[in-house]
Length: 246
Ligand code: B12
Image (cartoon, rainbow, N blue to C red; front, top):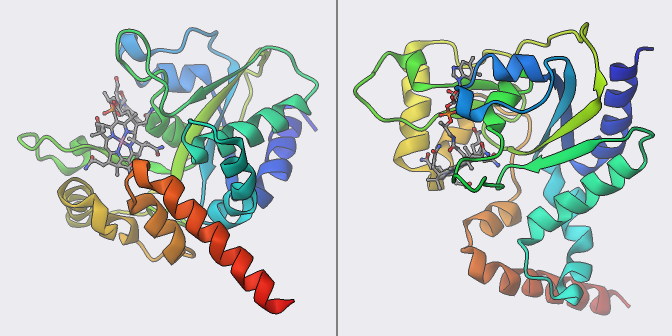
């Protein structure tokens, strides 16, 4: 087995059970598509991994840890904290130096995102990136959206790991599945994503295998300032349920 494949297996063995998926790409695949100001400052054959959270993440990784998160009284976003914890744990188990983790929310001093995770997901074959150019409606200022072949829009793209000391010129390119094929469907997708993303209809643009639970949907629709209160309620309900069983 070659090094990239061993690496991918390690990452997925650790992260799949937590509701996370990992796909590899080379720096050159990403840098060839983005404008110069977004290019990653690494050699062409350096291996990167894009990390997604899929519906199971909330119940498999996040909820079991909520009590600890509340006890720590930390100020960071609890979901971001949970993802960072698991990614740090996972890479610390690797025997490779020079690993850089870039999160979706990280912004450079020039106000640009550190990494464009949608482009990363597309070039890694994780999720097709539907952009306004695909619908030939140049007059409309659409924001663009990735669609996952199993989970539609019920997922998020959380991070890119860069393995700065690992180069592989022969990494096999996985093409993303083009699951929103017609122009009409693509316009519908982009209109839903831009028109009213809060109703989540854009997420159901294809038939999906699994989506966010009611609780997860409620959590993400709750304003960040009120999420800790919601988590406290979830923990209290859980404690009451356990008490009544005893
Ligand atoms: C800034 C930002 C916002 C801003 C502005 C929106 C925007 N897109 O600009 C605000 C705060 C409004 C926002 C809101 C939301 N966002 Co937002 N946001 C981002 C963020 C941090 C950066 C996006 C950005 O600035 N891109 C810069 C532009 C220039 O990039 P671009 O348009 O892709 O252009 C590049 C490509 O076209 C590429 N390119 C050129 N040619 C080709 C060819 C090919 C084949 C490819 C692949 C690429 C490619 O080159 C260009 C750059 O040179 C990303 C996370 C991230 N780090 O990427 C999330 C992200 C895009 N947001 C996301 C979401 C879900 C939302 C919300 C629904 C809120 C929410 N619940 O989080 C709303 C939706 C609002 C809406 N209707 O669009 C998701 C989208 C997931 C998906 N399925 O695609 C992301 C990826 C975050 C995540 N963790 O998953 N967001």
